[in-house]
Image (cartoon, rainbow, N blue to C red):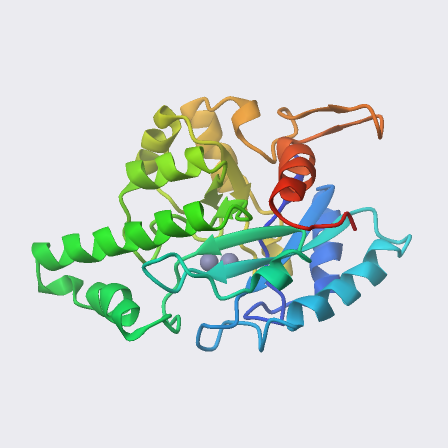
Length: 279
Ligand SMILES: [Zn+2]
Ligand SMILES: [Zn+2]
């Protein structure tokens, strides 16, 4: 396994078809050291968690797995928050975010917007794209604005999920906002997104990547081949892929090598940005 961990999966608490325990078992079988359960935020129709307290329940389940000696994989709890407005509002509160191990954010269809204007600006404009070029540009500008604002306003965000999927964004502007805010640009293997040509642009600008599965089933947990192929094709340096085994550094405190995400993002950066306490 080329990857240290998979940091984007969904359980039955949102729209996944697997328990938290299934995710841990599947990750261990694939040979990764770490896996994160990152269910969808609550303000989205059908696919979201019931309410944000669900994340605390998941934490309880994970605690039991992490102390179970049968498991040789460490499980983390995060959220894939929905960006729900043009000011970059998220549907998970700061109070809950501070108790999570990592935070992903992204744009999703059927999100309940923050305001009527946001509903019009993002979800209606995107549904009108077929009307013509002007409408398409408007939708793209609004999607980009909502995304970029989210990254600037929420320093807790570690990963931007599947940039440009469902909602077209300006890749360069999005990549620049990721770089400025130290947010990882996700290569999403479940959706095989973004395409190679877009990743090439983002790579040239110098953004750092993470390769995730976005698995909803045990079979696809830590299924990261799409990302591995792209890294090889574009010759992206291992140090720029936050969950690559070949990148990262030796951590003297535990006498082990850890990927950049395991070391820098989850521990160093997260503690700077929230009241997060180590699990
Ligand atoms: Zn998503
Ligand atoms: Zn997802």
